[in-house]
Amino acid sequence: MLAETICSAAAVAGLGIAAITAYRKRFLAAARIAAYSLVPLGLVMIGAVDWIAGTAFSPVAWAGFGVLGGAWLLFSSTRAVERRRGGRKETTGGAEPRAVAPAASSPSRAAAPKPQAGQSAGEDFSDIEAILKKHGI
Image (tube, rainbow, N blue to C red; front, top):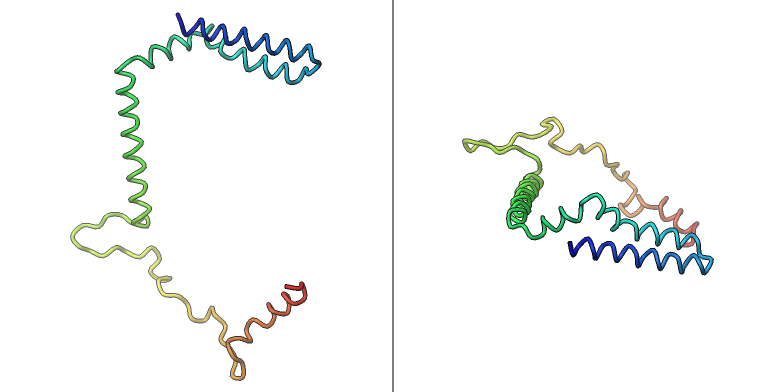
């Protein structure tokens, strides 16, 4: 009963502030304040305040929140372990984990261009240096 009274009083106070704001010709702000102040009144009218007040003081509800927290902790910890393992499944019997793509396990040497006979490794970036100099960097 006390929670409903407090919510109703907050709604009335908010509507009063909205009326004063509207009197000052700030109608958009007054409408927004009125909307916010009607929320607690609506919650009282649908009975949500009774449910929330009953839940807040119920030991069974708090135990339920504890169980939900434990479930969330289990989900998140198993997810973290999966990420740490790299998504591979648990192996049994001491077998080594299989490669995801066995054919692509070694990097290709042909992908990186080799400097030509008269070129040093620093000359590979000459085109990048030219672009940077062009822009004054």
